[in-house]
Length: 265
Length: 279
Image (cartoon, rainbow over all chains, first blue to last red; front, side, top):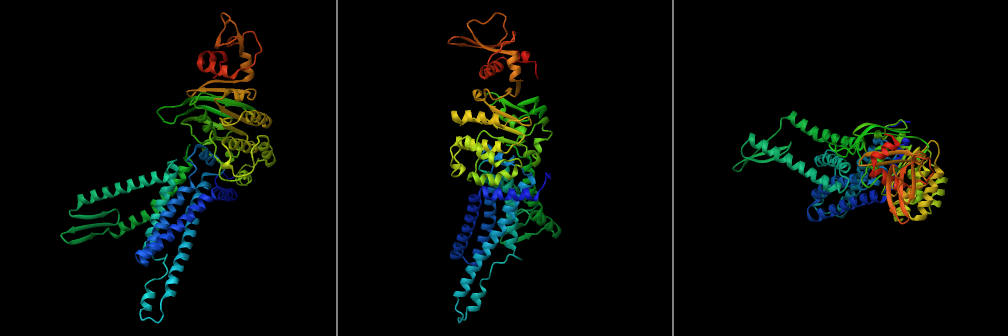
């Protein structure tokens, strides 16, 4: 018997994981999609197309991913639930892959499909409502297009946030048995605040008149009304970017696997 | 066979609950794991199933290391925790989702056990009472036909007829390849069911003996006066005299009283050790 990975056992595990808590997983998914739709509508009503598309995408994708990731390993709220999960005859790799598949691939596929459909419906309705004979038709038509997933800096940044926060939440649900979402959020906020102030402290030691110092990306110096931007050297920016894009999420997602292997209850 | 060699375990590395514990548990026996609340019974079972890891020493279950929680190991062991976890599924759905993980699972036996334990098979499991849920989990665990079955306080929440039915079921599923360990502080629930007794207290193994060995070495009776010179492990004033547990010097036959044995061993561990001279 292969104790590391078996495709048939993995299939059974995935089926069991989804159907065992179908209401929780499907309910969370529906709530996330509904939340995204409401955000899109509200921002569109209150602001404009750009903010509506960007903000609803960021909140729906990142927030939804985080919420769903608290569900996939949420067996440890009771001793019996945790024991039943850990002693189920499947390997730690299979259990971890199951979580990764649900809040990584399945969530992304469903969310992106839904977002595209929602965006298409809104944008098409807007375009169809325009008066083709109006002299402003072209300008109004060009004011909004379908939200682009490729070559879109907001999507790239949202993906970085998604992979990091979902990874952190998976680790958090395996460390904190109860109220994992709140506890993990507090830890993440604490770490971000520490990094921010540490970065600000270091920058203040090196420069005077520091206006803003955001870790990795931005240091602004302000002298009277003049604002100057200190940029990282290209190679250093590349390193920082790669760390945030690949290394940090990779570490967090792998930590979830290691934690699952070592989990005691 | 379950082998514990110099096993140490503690929730904090500074304060160990078990230190250098040695224990051999043989196939083909039903073990009663007895101890007070907080004595470390559940901890020992969790070490055996691999949901807690020893700090030092080794623990082998049928030659496999529980800590690694390999599927090939987990298919051979079933652990019933003290509290119950059942998802919002019907019994049929639960069987369809969980039984395929256990190659020896027997569907016919499962429904037979459910019937014998009088578990309602309609509706969702999470809507059943605690006792019904517990009986369902016991039936499923028995139907999995694993070589090792660990039960933590299985009779908690069971009504009196169900406890009797539980004892019958356990006796009926026992075979020479199987190990069943039942941890409880409700000692009377195990009477006439177990053939080996393990008593732990404060992380120490106080007694590990077979029922036959205990009957040979100890005598349980009620006397009007304690015989002079007798090595009395435990005595308790009763309405019609004094109930005593004493060394069986004259090869007397007597009925084992688990409660008195437990009280005697936990109150007088040094004498128990002398009498049994084990571990």
